[in-house]
Image 1 (cartoon, rainbow, N blue to C red):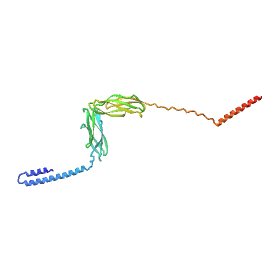
Image 2 (cartoon, rainbow, N blue to C red):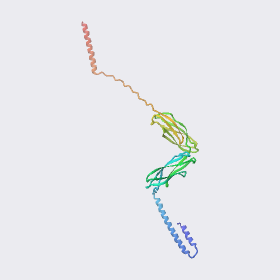
Image 3 (cartoon, helix red, strand yellow):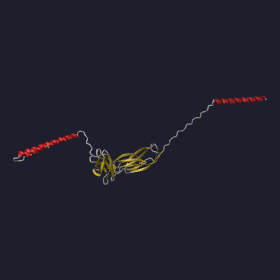
Image 4 (tube, one colour):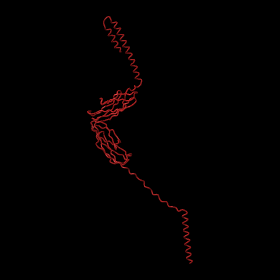
Length: 297
C-alpha cells in the first residue's frame, strides 16, 4: 500500500473527536502498519516473479498450436472459402480444444479437435462469403492459446481475352503461348494464370493488375521430353480459360551416307605366276616342234 494511503488512514483517525481519540489513533496506526507490511511483501514477491520471467526461460506450450495455414489468396464473392490448418500438440498429454475460423474477425466455423501428445492433425474449415462485398479481408484459424492469420481478396476473376499459340511444333522446339488477360475489378488484385498440357500443370504465374488493366502473359514451354503426338493445351485464370490443340511432330533424323570402299586389286601369288610361265613355255615348245616336223616333211 502507498504512503499516501497510509497517511490518509492516520489523519482520518486523528480527526475523530472524543476522549477515545488516542486509543483509536493507536488502532489505526497498527492497522496501517499491517497494510504497509503486506504491501511490501507483495512487492517483493512480484519482484521475484519478474526476475523469473526475465531469466530467458521460454514458457512451455500449454495447449494446441496452429503450425501451418493453407488458404487461397483470392476468391469470388459468394464462394465458399476453405482453409486447411495444421494443428499440433507439443505437450506430453492429449489435448482437446475448440479450433475456430474467423473471417474479418467473426467466427464463421468451429470444430472440437483432439490431438494426441506430440502429434499433428489437419483441420478443414470453411466460410461462406455470400453477401460480403468485394475487397481484401484478414482471416485466421485459432486455438485457445495460438493462431495463424492470412489475407484473402474477394474479387471477380480475371478474364481470358485472347490465346495465341502455334498449332504444331517439332519435338525439341519451345512452345511460345501468349495469353491476354484483364482485371474486371475496380481495384488492384493478384490472381494466378496457368498453362496446362494434356491436363498437367506445366507453368503458373502470379499476375498483379490494377482495376480494368489488361496484360499479356507469355509461357515458354520446352518439348524435348514430350513424345510426338497431338495434345490439348490450355490457359486458365481463376474462373476463365480456353483450350487449343498442339501437334508435336518427330524431328527428321539424317542418316549418314556410306562411303564406297575401293576394291583392292588382287596380286597374283608366286604359284600362279610360275604356272602361267610354265604353261606359256610348254605351248611355245610344242608349237616349235610341230613347225619343225612339218618343214622336214
